Length: 558
Image 1 (cartoon, one colour):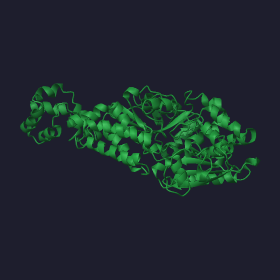
Image 2: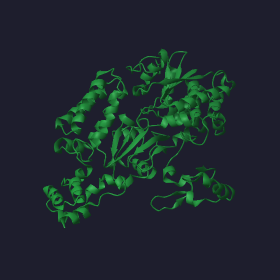
Image 3: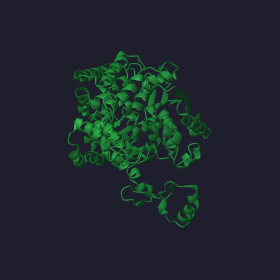
Image 4: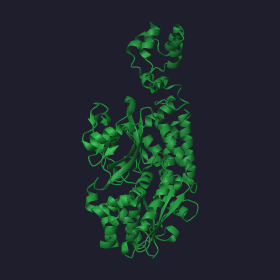
């Protein structure tokens, strides 16, 4: 619970707490300390949400209204400055001035490629033809990503306003929001928002009495991941099979039904009203010179604080993981972070100081993508991790082009062999050769970027691939064909920990000692000096505490 305007943040509020909150906070202006957020290490109370590390490093522009307004009430959006930018654009600016404002802001597409939005609009505006279209790509299909859906569910009018402004700028009078049917709440609220905007004269004929006409329709997608690619998306809207086509011609010249079409992501359109209302200079000052503004990430994985975060471009990976995310739980070591979803790449621990922006991530072998960010710790096998994403991307291939259809399957076969301990060193060269072929010859970004997770894992964690191939061992203890138990895998001597612990529990101390001596003959000494790496991988830790292996070993040996 957040109490405005003070910004007092209360946690785990129950119905029984309400009388005290009303009396102490609303009437007397005092903070109820027992309900405030406590800093995990010092246990100090932090009463204001903007002082909590998870929020203090965030800057909410795109998510500014999410959670604050009723998304089904247009008047609450208007009360927060909604549609002011539309009024400003239609009454005081020409289409060329709107495009120039967006160009000067430096806004780059938030769908993944990072192409300059203003330049894209200019191409569409200058394309010959009287009929043009605006398309919003809300086909968010990355595993664990929910940025676009959250905006559509929490602030649909910001996207609609951005699309109307874009339509005015390029000369389009009709727009489509392509949203997958898996998001029924987002679709419901979009329908409500479109109806309300029409009733208020903000959509339809003669918007705000300016003579500009613009209508919006919703097209529900069936959930094909490849339809996130703009030409496949356009084909799906037209009622055809959602398959990409070669470019050029680009949609800005020949898109929906052969007409010039501008296609942007949900987050891109949601930024437009703020740019028009506050000015290009205001937006350009946020972030970095080449990547202005903010980025939204779905922070997930092995991190204490998960959820949607909106941070200024240029913040470091370490700040996101450890300041915003709170670090790695259970005292584990940070290993890597995957950005860009199933077509992205990983950043190792050596890249914690890497700035998060389009160009820096690209140089590191990762991509911004649509905004997924998965944190992994020392217990994650990077071979299996990259195989997971490759499995997803291969299954989602439309099969139209051979490099993607066949190349992805061959790469998956090789990775599967490696995780089973059946790989060879030549397989690593084959992976790189296949990746280059897919990147060079695939029709669309799905095929071109499918090898990304594998190649980045091979770049930064080649030793893990070699361990699977040469030593027939999974260092993280994840690949089931190479590991009997995580604790055995963690032991440098490879002692069969589960067997001798089980025998000790049965009172069979001599037999337990014999099992230990097969791999390590010095059980007595080991019980006193062993670092007990196995305890860090003990499954019992998820219930209460890991097995006290050194004490058991000493008892057994004595």
